[in-house]
Structures are given as structure tokens and as C-alpha cells.
Image (tube, helix red, strand yellow):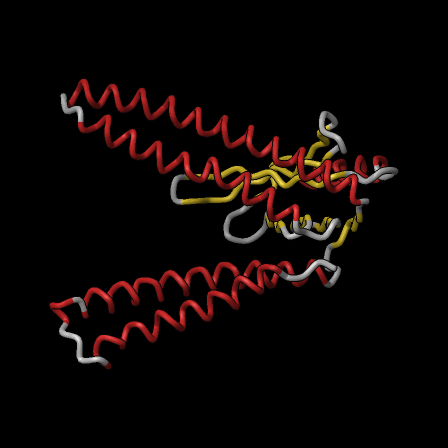
Length: 239
């Protein structure tokens, strides 16, 4: 049975935020001098409280949307899979996600190198290249880890998916294309993977612009006609 994973995240951040809220007052409780680290501890704890509140607001909204989907609001299809279908899907999703993140990383590398070389020539300071190299290392870490995190999450998920008007739930993965500026861009069937997969391409705003994501839903045996109808339904709604 699919559970509301977003609500669990909200509850975890309630606890984390409470801990840091208490941390703001710890220096004064223990008589710690502000100039000897007390101010720093209180500032860091206060900053994390603000971060926690933002995370709670965002994920509380997602938890409410996921709760509505789980209750059947806007439900279009609910599919369950055999163990073999799920294993093949998880492997195919992992390869697709690695390829996507690799291509994105290569694009960032090319742009960064061009910008870095031009800035080095103009400013005539080799430090720019070291800064660019540091940025690339930071970008490479999530590019490497995110597909693996997703793979492990799907490996330990229920072999079922729920498709709704506002988002899809695939095992423990929740994809939402409403609220907070997100939008559904395209829905298509990827027949190159085994099993065939419905791909929901959507985008959401981030600090650096619109970030593109893909929700992949495997098509169970005997459900291709229903899958074709689902694709047609979403694409016609976008017109």
C-alpha cells in the first residue's frame, strides 16, 4: 500500500526545526559568552530554523496534494506490477536517469569551461579556472548521487503506481506538476525500455531557472491501450 511519504518528511522536519529552535537558547542557558562562540551557535541555529520552516511549508503543500491523490482525487489509473516487471523497470529507470544527469553535467562543463577561459583571458587571473573547477566538482556530486539515490528508493518501494491529474506516485517517488510554479510539459511513451514506460516531462522553478524533471511510469502487461489513452488525455488537456 502506498503511504504519504511527503507527510513523513514534514514530520521529520518538525522535529529537526524544534531541535534547532532549542539550540538558539542553549548558549544563554549554559552561560556561554557570545564572543566565544555563543553568537555563532545561536545564529546558525536560527538560520536552520528558517530553513526548516521553508521546508515544512513546501513539503506540507506537497503532502496535502499527495493525500488528495491517495484518497482518489483526480485518479486516472492505478497499476500494480509483478516482481519481474518492477525489477526491469527499476533497472531501466536507473540507466535513463544516469544518461539524463550525465548529459546535463556535460552541458554544464562545456558552458563553464568556455566562460572560465573567456574570463581568464579578460581578467588575466588563473584563479578563475580554480573557481570553475570547484563549481564543477559541486555539480558533479549530485549528478552522480541522485540517480543512485532514486535507484535505491525504487528498489525498496511497493511495486505499484498511481496516476492522477496533478501528479503521479511511483513506489515511493512522488512527482507533482501543480503548485509552486510547476507545470506539465509533455507526456509520451518510451517504447525503447523494457517494460515500456510513460514519461511525464514537467518543469519547476529553481534559483537558477526552470528545472526539468521526468516521471517514469512503467506500463504493466496488457495495459498498453490504457496507456495510449492516458497519453492522449494529458496531451489534449494541454492544448
